[in-house]
Image (tube, rainbow, N blue to C red; front, side, top):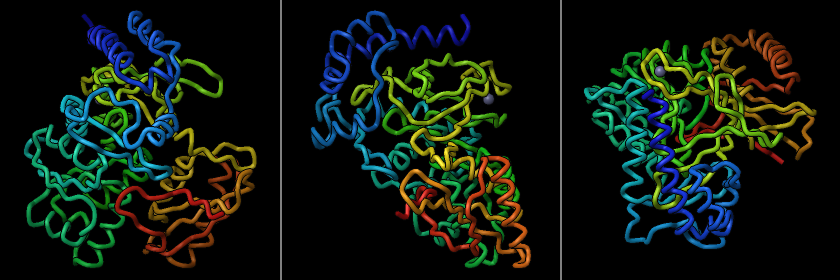
Length: 429
Ligand SMILES: [Zn+2]
């Protein structure tokens, strides 16, 4: 039996039981989809034709049925953990997990970090927020799942962090790419050191896009003397970690096998997109082994493109994908659709002059005529080069995204640095 046939067989049988479980236990889905429809879907072993679930559906439900909503399929006695989503753009969602749900998340996440190169003899410092966020404790356990020694650090206390990395001989760091910029300032200003003097060999990055742009990754690797891996793509209400790169670094390997059914859909054209090389669509996910709060055809809002579905040179056979952007982040400027990620990509191509920190400012409510791009330039860039840099940026934007934004170049350190996710799009109206 081929690996893909083997997985399909297991996933189908899990889906059958999951849909039956949801039909019998989830008040939320009994009213959103209907018990009879769910039972028929279970008998057919397919989610085809079922209504999609959005984050807005879940938020409304939690508001109506506080505190946890009506999609809770077990009693509180079976719940082991309560997380919440990070809520950068809206109200956070509460996430309940049973012991088995946690094990499932650790299983997928452990495979993800292993794929990104974390080894049992590594000491890894975990610098994501532990305060209720699944990127904290659950990701911590995923790191442990590789056999590595994990230092539970969280966010803040950055000076002590640098001291600890040196004194313990920490070899790997798990954080957001933007946190590195903050650490950079501390290392170069507070210590008489260069980032590459630290014992780190591996950087595991997640929670923010950015590393998929070759310029940004190259710059990090050069400046820090580490291998930089995109190691953590997740949708915490579905599964903490769903994707990670391998040494081939050709997109995220899908890590949801055995836990999820993945589908692609184009909602503007109401079209199901077969999951094959080159396909582009919104990733929608169905839990197939979750007890507490299972989700069916959940819209992640992430637009992905499929790099390949054939086995990878690393030996893994799961499909690989890139994230193009978020369907709800798309900004329309003078009729042109722009993903903030396209602007990030442009900034990352000029990392010999920019330091990668940027903000997109929208000054008036939609329809937007233009946007203001505020970008920090590298501290080693001469002032007389600024005019030239500005016109280069304008030219590149015009060529790549079809319009010329207003541009403001700022000194290194002018934009706020955040410990968690940086806010890139600011609505100042
Ligand atoms: Zn691979």
